[in-house]
Image (cartoon, rainbow, N blue to C red; front, side, top):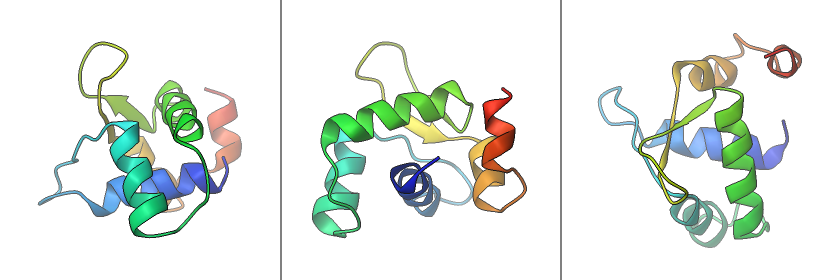
Length: 93
């Protein structure tokens, strides 16, 4: 886990509407986190790669099939943000 992972998870968590996750493609997350909020200076490819990795660990899930599908945060992602799940625990998955 790194600062990009945390920013992605926090951003997607903040976008939830009435407890329902919002699904966004890596480009939209990158645009908002980097351009609009100036939180990080990382490339779109970094965001795409990290979102795929977060999905591999169950913190995000694809909201569709295919390479360009959007991602949304999972309960496991929320548990990580709440401090109920440690990064070390993710390595065991």
